[in-house]
Length: 114
Length: 252
Image 1: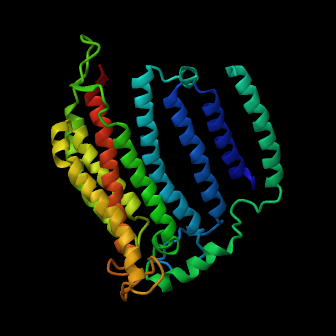
Image 2: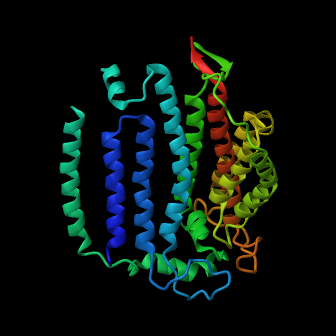
Image 3: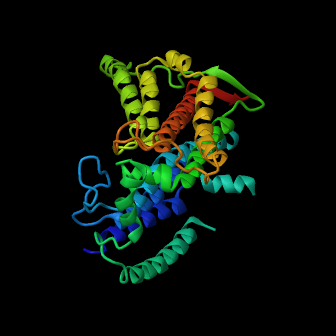
């Protein structure tokens, strides 16, 4: 089970990509993109994890206590928030696409544009 | 390309990816045996160097501060993008949303939801403020605090007070707060340059007690500005999307 978390990463990534490739609805496609992105969080936090270590907050513990990697946590943290805003941007594109073309099926949207 | 062809093409690619991925995993140190020295070094020196006991915040707003500026501007641009994409286009007319299925039974917002939302607005606001201003000592910071701050405004909408929601978060003020947040971060960096230091160098006094609110110099200040920016961005995004729902814009 030493590599199990990393297999989960690949699985989440693959499931999300499969959803994007086969999707028939823009909103569904955007949700799939979020799933793909979630795999990066599992990967980052999985890499930084260390058995028996504490969170990297030294307010009430000695500085030399073994702690997990703070760098990957910082990366995941900022990305969670930024991802939410970018998702909102994508959703507003979907709203405009629906207004303009009357459909949210990516397949039909491609055909409309030729 | 048909849907079936696309699926097979993807599955072939996925099989190749799986093969290389599994091969790559064989050489990887196992889960829980983190080998990188970088995080260890930061964990050891961050408290002494920055007087911040929350090392994740120290990484975010100090060691990788330059990266966080970019992240914050991605957020800023995304929020501007939402309001640009959803702006009133030529030929669009605004009208209040009309019930498209008149006669169906719509349950009114229950009193329980209203009361709970109204009750939670105050505590959520305080919580957001606390999170945004305690980056240096606890697992918090501007990003989390900003989202919680925006939540308190969204609770106001949930309590059924859309007009109040619009009144307390008018676009001009939200924009101004967002701009102050985004500009403040960059300004702190440039101030350091003006003092003859590298961009985003921590030039403020670090305080004497590690983890105190007054400690960690620019880390706490940057976190505060990020909180303003994130909170304003999310209020802007939510109000744009709500306006889209409640005031339908139709091409005529």
